[in-house]
Length: 177
Image (cartoon, rainbow, N blue to C red; front, side, top):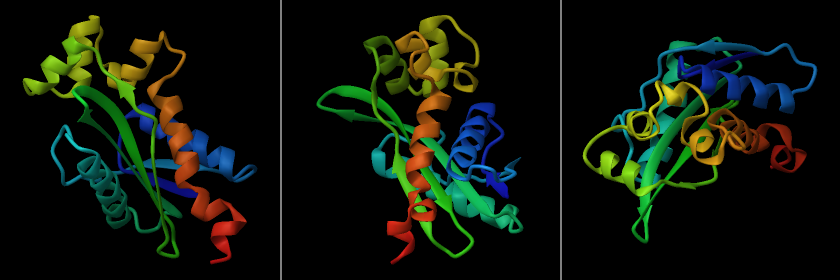
């Protein structure tokens, strides 16, 4: 089973591998990183833009790897709710029959120092690296790992959300309709 993921980020590739191996136990899963633009800003600033970014990435992955079994788009974003900047991600999975599964991860409240840097124009990963004195945290535990002492990680949160996005392909209740 070939899975085209619209990313070269090892966190997103690892999440896709874990989710597909969990949902399709026993299947030989091949994860293939491909180009797949989000067609939204580099840092999506709304739930809607983030969702569209994931769907766009999945569709663009399909164009770049039409031979794959499934196409995956993952888009992290931020939005402000009642004055609190939150981060989350949307997952989109396209299947060979044209079906689409989408799911959103849990949300993480960001600290004021990160919020200020993001509002000044930095992408979340860079803002986290400055506040927490790290380098390339978005290819590691991300904000989830930094803020929870690695009890939650970006890859783990993305894996869970991808498993939910795969429900239309794995749960018989969805398959009957």
